[in-house]
Image (tube, rainbow, N blue to C red; front, side, top):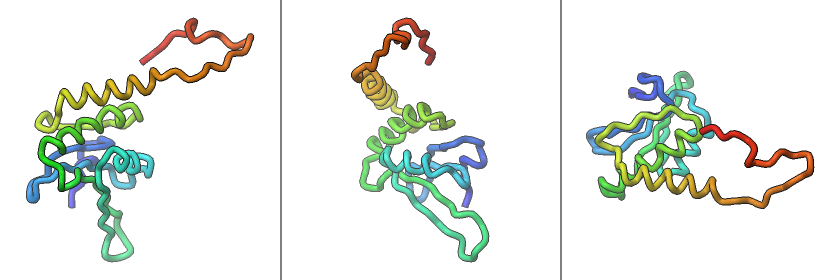
Length: 136
């Protein structure tokens, strides 16, 4: 079994694997549980193959659920990209799976969640948020 994330040097490699036609999200060998759990939360289903003997790495990959239509799988894959990037991961998705509308929707959702104000805690010594520079 090949692992595209290891081969390409990415944290998540999203692609279509033929026979059967599935949308995969590969992670590097030994990927952190935080990354695997994030893919779970984003709607991918985790699969694991352990070596027959006691040696060798466990192969872990994620797939879009089989019951989804092709369009829904494409949307799932695309919607996963912004949260993965925001978490600091290197992600690759091919043009054939990228849905611009789903991407804009996912980024708008993240922006709205980040813009939701929380009750500010102010102390006389603390500088105001308005006075700080903001970097993206």
